[in-house]
Image 1 (cartoon, rainbow, N blue to C red):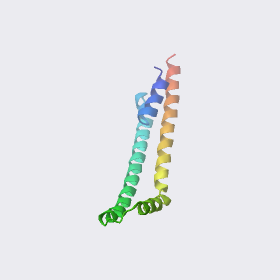
Image 2: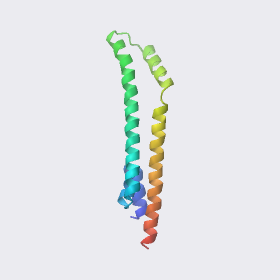
Image 3: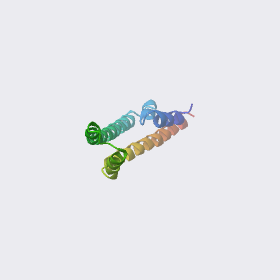
Image 4: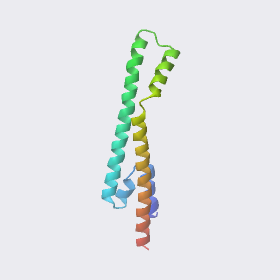
Length: 117
C-alpha cells in the first residue's frame, strides 16, 4: 500500500495524527493527536455538563410525578434554544483538525512515495 494512502486512511479512519506518526512525522503527529484529544475531551465535557444540568431539572419533576410530555418538551426546547455555542465550536474544531490531519498525511505520504521511486 502506498504511504500516502496508508497515512490518509490512518488519520481519517482511526485517529487524527496517527498517519503522521506512522509516516515518521512525529512533531506534527503529536500536535494533531493532542489537539484532537483536547478538543474531543472538551466536547464530551460540555455535552455531559448540559445533560447533567437538564437532568437536575427533570429529576425533581419525576419525583413529584409532575413530568408530562408537554413539560419535557418545554424543558428540552428551552435547553436547545441557547448555550450550544461552545459545543459547536468544539465540534467544528474537531472536524477541522481531522481534515487537516487527512490532508497533511496524504501530502507527506505523496512526498515519501515520490522519494522512494
